[in-house]
Length: 501
Length: 92
Image 1 (tube, rainbow over the protein chains, first blue to last red):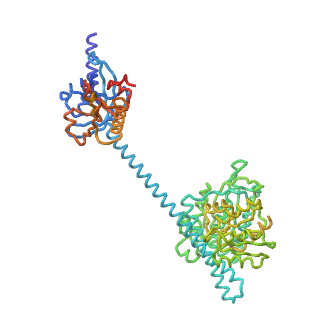
Image 2 (cartoon, rainbow over the protein chains, first blue to last red):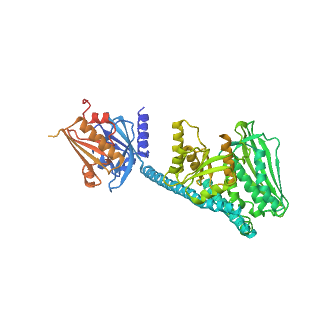
Image 3 (cartoon, helix red, strand yellow):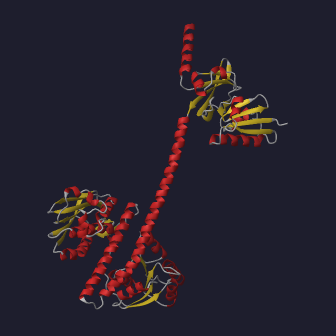
């Protein structure tokens, strides 16, 4: 029995001497009674220096508290200290255990600092990105406004008496203007895609109408080069589908445009096939655009979707274009969760494929494809401060039975609205004094007060971000027309609202 | 004559030391009103004091008066036990 007790005591002493955690025992007055070697090491004192001195103790029991420990040479370490009540040599005492947390504390402080720095860097990047996006949106607007006048005037010039040579010059005018607009659109699109600012706008549409509209748009260009343009649509597709019609159209136009551009003879075939029936409601569709062009060499197949890359640098000179079309298409396809790739054989042709998941559409919201070109007599108020833009609209409507009153700003527009009866208002947004948004709000207010029917207000704006379009619609505009306005688009909108009145 | 003399030794101005200061001043103001003297000593300004007073862990509160002298370690964020240690447990 006594051997056992001695043995046990030796074991405990051994344990306490070798445990890496510093242990102190203090009495109820805080006077040090015992410290193990780990405590000596941590505190930097010899046992003999410290036994009998008042160390003190923390409040409460079994609660970790952080303290700074001063070591003899002025060195500081951070410890957690914990206290439990024990009986030591027949007296009530406290057992204090310490744990060095200096490293953890420093790491934690560094971590906090890093988090702060990351936060600041992230904020700075977000601000820079926002500034960039705003700059691009502004630039796009600033370039579009004068382009509106240039293309509009060129359109008008084309309809006057011109010599053959003059007509050629004006054609170049218009063509270059349109190219410039496309370039601005591409750069704006790409920057928005890269900033993740493009939203998916799903609407119901008919695939056959979509493909036919692309055919109608692109066929003249193909025929001009002596190429055939064909399309094949999977007959199993439902009549109406739901998806981002405008973006799908953009991708297809891009691929078909490229195919025409890079094909000298032969044909271009657009195909649209169901790849997989996911369920009753959605389909994975495979689109392909095949040409019989010069083909793409194997080492260029991967890089062709990168920005500003065409087959080689001489291609740009020969064929023109921004080199952004495929990059934008790729980013759009990926945004919709699809894949895009190309298969090609030199001198035989290339086929671009992409997949897109589309839902079964709702027939009632299907886009009305009826064309509006006939206009009945109308009285229109045009609010527009820039003379050339006034002239453009007037010329566009010259052959239509339309009376136009002009207001140079929103205030005059409001006065004319209050004293005359109009069928429709064309409202420029950026005007001096009272801008188009404010004028629209005022007009809506007057109507509400009088209990009148809402007059169609068509906003004309070069601000083309979805946010800006939404601001226009929020102010009470019926529709937003993007500047530069084309004659056909203007007539279409007029007849649409005139049919409604 | 002040009934209570309390010296709080701190090591700089981090959150632990500030918590100790706040806890101590609030309990003094609540329970000891005009009967206490409170000194806050930053040992970073007076390193010799730590040695003289045999202070190893900071913050440390030393209750010099009334006797017996007591040392309490840590941020003092246990007001009930702090009252108990200072003999204020009867106070409301």
